[in-house]
Image (cartoon, rainbow over all chains, first blue to last red; front, side, top):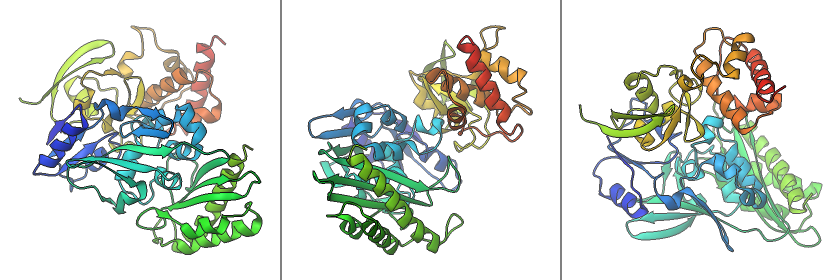
Length: 286
Length: 158
């Protein structure tokens, strides 16, 4: 195997595009280097993107936040402006693994690892985040939910790299939240995850909403029916009931040792309403 | 033998080594540099026995490539005591019997030091969350938590 550490996105993309063997992008390595130890893993090239200066920073502009693909989740947790604007996204990113893992793991890596249970992904989808992808043909922008296409598979072509995750600034009276269910308090993989992002009008009525679910389908789900169920409401009991029903109905989970189909459907609704409640309170500045 | 030439600062010393692209930092520390304090428990970032500090951040050295360390600063358990003087965490681990078989101890000490460096006066809950990436099959964790609390008190002049 070859290890390369390019200093520009163009060089990284060229290395990936020109290789004839199997190539991987190395950011935090917390998933890739675990897989690299399995007997079935073969890599001819690893391209470490952590020496590309523009991928190592969070830029906050008049439009929003541009989070470089090599920024660790621990560093996101220390970014005061991002945390204030998007507490749900940052909390989701900070739920991943231990202090040791937090030092290295990235949300771009979490997205590209394409696990259905990735914690930061439903929060990013609810936030309307975009992935800026660099490749041999230049740059393109897609909604983050367009990156994972199946467990472990992405829509990236050869030579393409998710370089940046972009999230807009917040209009007034907006808030987001992410909750997951795990059978213990820490260090586990989501059985179900739910991200909600809301913007209210001056009377406290929900003007726009996005609801995303994780670990209940092969890829993250943006549940439009769940958002519709709470639009125009002040999140009264009946609206929360409709939200939960829409989430449970949208799930297409599997049965496995961590949860049954029935359990996951039920919990998706429960978590979505709890996350909506938190997002609503945050929107009101409560 | 061919390999990637890497220079790094390890426990304050300038170190140069050759390693293969697949080799982890843990492999390099143990097999090439003779620093056997960091242990391989799981090799998958779950147990924390291989914890070291890389450029000021606590990491599992089993999930870092040796080649990635070019130009970086690494602190391992071997650098924790200053000569014959143990770090307060090491002293308190001994006093509180916070170890039995000892395999997890270097990792716990590195993680506890990283925790106290960032948060000198943690609550018990913060200690337990801060050390959640380190597994111990002997102590039941309580003695480790007490030792970290005692060390924090001593470091803070209590």
